Image (cartoon, rainbow, N blue to C red; front, side, top):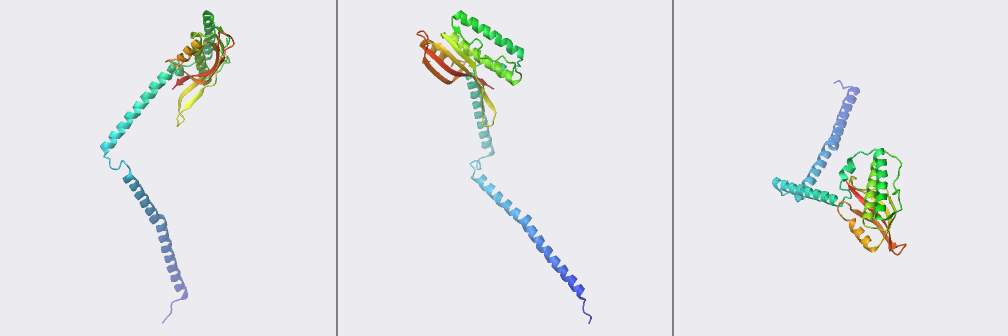
Length: 252
């Protein structure tokens, strides 16, 4: 009987070895990339199902959830309306929408500044109140863009506060000038409102200081106090020297 050649046997053995290796590698890849991911996905699904089952909304019908959504929407609307009401009450400028949206050019600012200085000087002369800061601390340097809008709003804040002090019969306006605005944002970085602080120093008696304090809380002319210091006045008539920073509020 003729014996098979060794080469044939070696080839058949190699084929068996390769087949076994292929089967083992295929099994490993199946477990690694099919079975294990499916188990992980199943575990995640069980975890999500457990969380949903333990949620307080799990036993609610769709109609109940819709009713709750409508209730939350109504609450949001109420809060939004309340915010707008508060913003309107605390706004310093009754025309703040126009102040925010009206375009301003350089000539407008120069004209407004000149007319304001002339008007306040005439008003102080008429009331016989000494107005020392004739320039009102307002920069005449011409700017453009957003900086010009800020400059115009500062002018309006200085104008309103100067009028308030003169109307309340102070003895003398020693100093008044605007400070850089302060922006307030919500947790998402959106602007809620801006403060336009104004530094003021004036001589006044007790009675008119009290009426001035009342006036800055009146509607359409609200100013918030950033700091306040009251000292003895320089003369018998001007019993108090008031140094304060008050902010005009501008809401979006």
